[in-house]
Image (cartoon, rainbow, N blue to C red):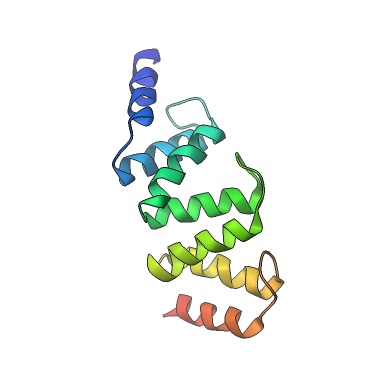
Length: 123
C-alpha cells in the first residue's frame, strides 16, 4: 500500500518518540509492511537508542556486531549491549555481552565477567 508506506516514511522522518522510532526501525529491519531498508532502520534505532530505549540499543548492537546496515564495529556493539543490559535490564543484551567477553570479541577476553553476566541472566 503506497499511501501507508508514505505515511510511515513521514512518521520516520519526524520520529520523536523512542518507542515509535524503535517500532519503525524494526519494521524497516524486517521488511514487515515496508520495503526492507537497513540503513533507515539503523537511523531510527539510533534515535531511540540515544533516548535510552533498551530494545533499540539491543537491535542496534546486533547490527553493529554483524555489520547489517552499518559498518561492523564490535566496540560499538559492546557499548550498546552494556547500555541495554546493565541500564535497561535487557536480558538478551546481557547474554550477548557475556558471549563477547567469553570469546574476546570487541573486548578483552574475560571469563570472570562473562560468568558474572551469565549469572545475572539466570536470575
